Image 1 (cartoon, rainbow, N blue to C red):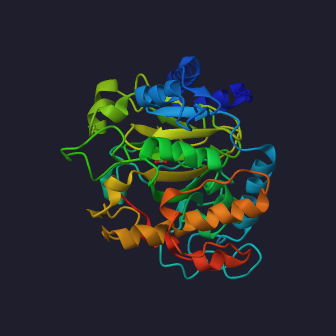
Image 2: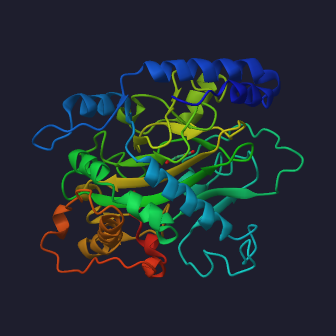
Length: 390
Ligand SMILES: O=C(O)CCC(=O)C(=O)O
């Protein structure tokens, strides 16, 4: 990990009052343990295209794996520039309809949920009924600086409709090969989201598991609720990153209130932070117990999240109603939702003509024209009404 975060560990501890020492110790112990795990390195495939067995096994053992140096510096620069430009076009405050230029804000008129705000260093989901109540406890909300804004951007759902760089990153061929290796050649999308953790502002996401639908499915297994790719635009640290309980993705639906009560604090024993550099991509099982503390450090984190499912987990399944209304997902619905992948592959081909593009099996005999033209982003408006929320 390239970032020296000792200053941020101190800054973070200083936000925790009488728990300062406990927090400092938790961050340092967790970071050291995370770096000892054998679950990081470049993406590797066997000659037949299958994912290297040790990677598959390590991902299965821990429930997450850090793929290093996946996204090139050039692409990271594109993402940073595009996301910065996009942020200037977000509404200037939660109830405003104009952006920082005084123009209609980017997300104006969208029917699907998109930008979520939080009070600085808050935990807006924790202990609430939001997202079917899956964030069972509220994390400590440190006090933000007196000059902090009243609210800051926290999560942006449906991100591909707002950023061509995100659309291209979505179709990264190595990542799509991993998606096929884990979820089959006919893998299906989940959703795409930005998690925004600005220094001294970014909100917490309380401990939770993402899955909602298949806990009691007789065919339940560790991969049935899919996974997220978390591309790091600035890197991820013990202070600003997501923490996980390694291996918990195999343990079914977990009573997190009980875990916290038994621990006597929100600092769950055995958890580790997902630490990595800009350009690294974490694959994280959606069933793993995970969460992030408010960003009380100096380094920003911006995660470009994109999730994928097994087709059998979503086909002819009633959705959980977390990211969209409760909807029954049939083949036509999934096909429509998958169009963004076709556009992403073509957008990427145009930007990186020398790269071998990913061939997505279900498109092979599909007559749909996935040609991408710059300026077509508006046609993706509200595409996330079809998120496959399970
Ligand atoms: O990025 C974060 O802080 C939280 C991510 C998360 O909870 C998720 O991807 O499900």
